Image (cartoon, rainbow, N blue to C red; front, side):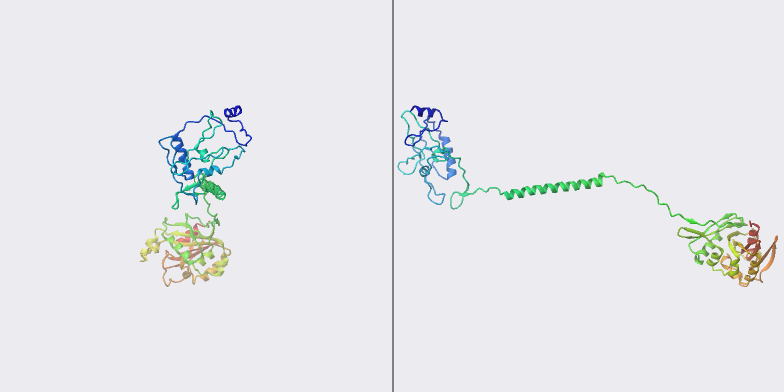
Length: 426
């Protein structure tokens, strides 16, 4: 008895086995009964096991009546007594459990009462430890883990059915992790692309290339032919090809250039092809204006060639009026040319032969309309120490004169134009 009392005082002491193999109960002072807490505990137990019960009576000493238990597991509901009776004698730790309790039956209805019978005492003066409702129902018996109940939902067939708890699938967790990883990588890539575009458009400074003007193609120009006579001015003519349609209009435009009387203007003719500029020779000049000059004459002419423009003297207008010619072309500008020759004697003979067609052949360089039938033929004249050859059409302001002076041949469309050119020879 003294040893039992020592174990009762020391809760951590191991239970002692008797000769009959029964456990020694640990007597403790019976706690006071808390009806409210007991009601909450029984309500929780009823919700777990679907065991309906009647609330405790107002009289604490009277036994509690339990309502009939509806079958919730496909058959009749097992009674608490049978559940307690079927428990093993020992728990998982090998410690002996208390023997199942005999639940008394409420008088008159034959149903089991949830009020437990007081356990047998070891001695008359030591009271056994009061059991909790969980221990009575077998929910928290010593040595047993806390019971885990499946989730239950009400149905039409019964108040509740068991709903198995579904654990998260490892496959779904793997898919979720992959989704998060892929989404994160895509977000980083898109952010990097957007940052690169923003930097390229707004932040990167495009190097500004210096605005270097492209120089025009270099023009290769032939030197201007040397002037053979002394001129007062120079007026260039520019054409792009050697043809009558290109040269004749440019030549006729010289008639409208204002300049003083008895004035000589040098008029070189430029031929521009691509980036090259050449100056027309006497042969190209005759070809462009379709002047049929003797081949022998062209053979005597060297590369020296000047085309000039002459403004007539002040008395030219009076001569035209006296001749009853009121057209301004009668006293307008005149065209002449100077060329170098190799043999003056042969050139003189060739020019005498050309006089027969010279008036018609030189028509493109005239700024006036000559008579259809020129009066007579070429006549010889004298100017200083030079011999002149001329034909009036019909007056000296409208004539063709040619003069040989040393190694130069002068041809002009008026008397005074030829004579002034011979005076200005260098």
